[in-house]
Length: 158
Image 1 (cartoon, helix red, strand yellow):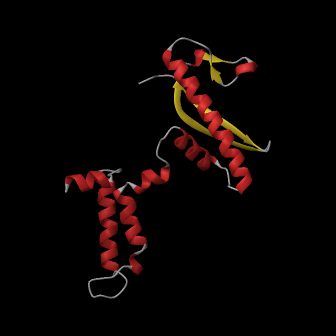
Image 2 (cartoon, helix red, strand yellow):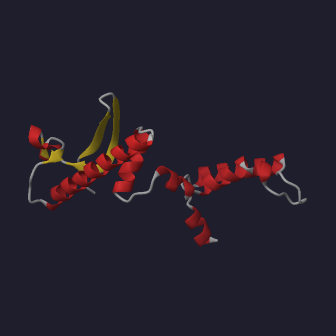
């Protein structure tokens, strides 16, 4: 694993709104170029890691400029969550919501929240309090056992 300083993206919108999020990239801070003509990118080098980092950052810059223009046009609210999702999309990473959707606890919580609309064993709609409490206890047990149990882990092991 590469040790070094985390690289953050700072995005200013309409000269007033400041957004800042980690890109997930790291670099030795001594390799950072501070001249005004190339501020914000690693210095030129033949080292592959620095070249890849610079390429990734240019790709992110282009992606963000495109997405900011689209968001401005359609009225999308740009905040730090939006910025994090854009970084994840640019680098083909999963968004927070996609990660949550893969967790067993997410689906148990969804079941709890929608218990009033689920058909019960008697054929009527709505689960009983004790059944809901059982799901809550089950969820807590999973969280205590393994905080990030994925649905795919559960399905493959059962």
